[in-house]
Length: 185
Image (cartoon, rainbow, N blue to C red):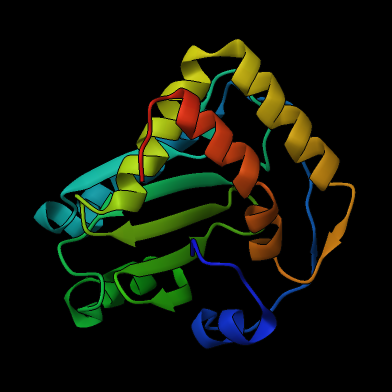
């Protein structure tokens, strides 16, 4: 969801509508990589060869970075719009479809205990490459990691009409960090 949001745009892609939220940022938890590994193994078992890529993304994938305690995973699915090819298997495993937009599906599971956001994109999609470039930069640059952490903590002080507005508010800082990583849109 890279375009500027408004309630109407979000309502068109959010399966359950807008959900007002207060973001909670916690210190890095060294258990997050193991939580990802368990979920990745589960996804490999559920999807088999349909999962062309499985990567831990987001702040929980960066050692030392404070984050929402939600594991973010991107799965490369050849055609996310072909929901019958994979979605029933994910739903049977407890994943709930939250976002439906062309070329992208986002699902959620594990609440309240070990929540996971699962993003399904084609494996070579620009958003997948952006996620991985951003993760690599944050892992390599302490100053960018600190900048991003401070931004997230500041934004977490507000209440949001939906989590997507929080994500959008981080956009300028993410753009700066990606530029330093050599990213070109």
